[in-house]
Amino acid sequence: MSRLLRRLQLLVVGLVLVVAAFSTGLSFLFYLVYLTILVVGGAYVLTRLGLSDLEAGYAVSQLSGHVGDRLKVTYTLRNTSRVPKLWLEVHNPTSLPAGLPGRAISLGSETERSWLVRTPLIRRGHFRVEPLQIRTGDPFGFFESSAAVGTGVTVVVYPRVEALPLWKLPAANIDGSHAMPERTLQTTPLATAVRPWAPGDAFNRIHWKATARHGDIHVKEFDLEQTADAWIILDLDRAGQVGRGDESTVEVAVRAAASIADKAIRENRAVGLTVNAHRLAQLPPDRGGRQHLKIMQLLAAVDGDGTSPLSEALVATVPRIRRGMTAVVITPSLERDWVKPLATLRSRGVGCVVVSFDVGEFERFISDDTPRPGPAAARPHEPVEPPDPVAEAARAQRVRALRHALSEFDVTVYTVHPGVALGAALAS
Image 1: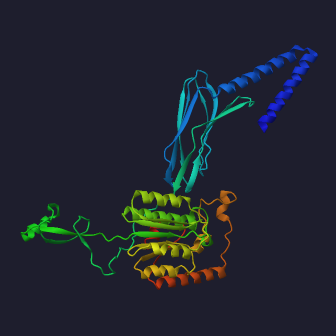
Image 2 (image 1 turned 90 degrees about the vertical axis):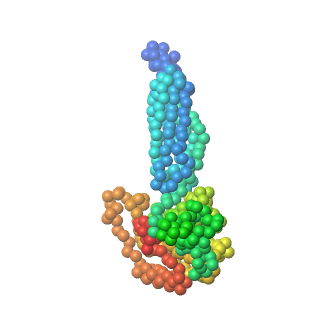
Image 3 (image 1 turned 45 degrees about the vertical axis):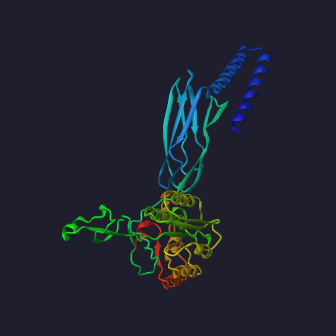
């Protein structure tokens, strides 16, 4: 709008000068008319030549990453003409929370400029990096020329994966709780016994120390690894979510699901996933890199906007969980209606683990990076609203009732607190 107003003002001034010059015949006014034509014409020609013979492009280092990574974007501009480019404004419109900083540069004749921009990935989700925008103009601001270069790309930011060194799922008991380990002819890390050699045994199974001690050839026997596949049920029902920013129950729950799935897949377990977000989404159990990618892509897109309770998600998932698996329920819910479907799994020989949240602490917790109004210096002195003792007592009673209901079925429960690393929260 300001540029259009400036052009209108220039047109009015030019008309006034022309009328005054021809009306009065003064040479000074004719000099001003010629100077105006020269300045405006030169500005127009300079703007038209600003983007001619210009080559530009950008390259994104990766189209996916985890929260905490840095996205690298390389820009290149090349002037192939002998006319210098005095002013070029280069920027990428993007929906990334941290943005991509633009740059104003000048290019000499037949020169090239390249630079690298690093931007942090601070929030999970799907984001767009639009085509490169290049803009130029004249020093007086009368004219402007712009161009779009390249095509836009989508950057997927996965949730941050935290290390869980002490987190362990219970081993599968396919044949009962007291089943003996199954022997195998394959070579596994579990060498548990030594026996005399028999025809057909491979030479790489010979136990040389036992052979030297007994005087006869002895070979090692191996057991199958007792690993349990996992099915993660992530509760994103909006009714139970509290907190804000990176330390809300939604974000911490998504990080917990991503970390547990990552550890299980690295242990060569099959992992399934159920999420009751905007719609009920289920991934059948599988192992390997493809399943890891599917889980991360799903967790990058979900939000705490679910409309169905955890009990319905469990009822929809129970028929899919087979004996010998472990169900990992991640939920901030304090209701007890989902304990009954979980008890059904326990009776079928399915291990159950619950990752719960201290909802009261999450409601009161405000992290340092949470945006709040007011100057930063005043934040430490902000008044903290005291918790309602009646509400706190009611919540504590609901927590005790839920813990008691879960303990009746011998369900392992881990409690996550805000500001505490998941590796520490899931170790005790």
